[in-house]
Image (tube, rainbow, N blue to C red):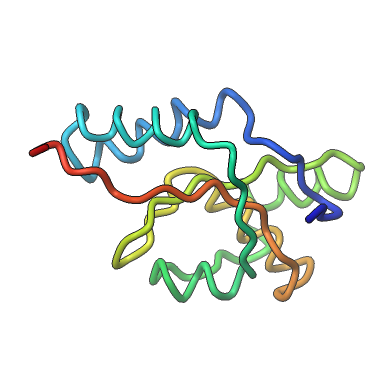
Length: 125
């Protein structure tokens, strides 16, 4: 499925950002395993912004948020956004791309967003 405002694959810079965020939530060794799984995955799933907000429990930021404004400007200038990186669980973790989801919501809350989704990995294995 091709979406109008999105690239087909995450950018390389998204993975270190995901690692930094996940390292705040879980042990960095486990975060590293999750990010490796994200890099290895070739699957892209598609979800609506409003469903990503519901699953994550996060609010959508206003269209005056600095990072949301930057992403909205990118889209309006014809630049495509990078798919978001997600970790399945309760709640859903948006490892990278929260502001991109918010920007997309302001463009069209029903637009599907490409996502790289992986399951949480236990380090006890």
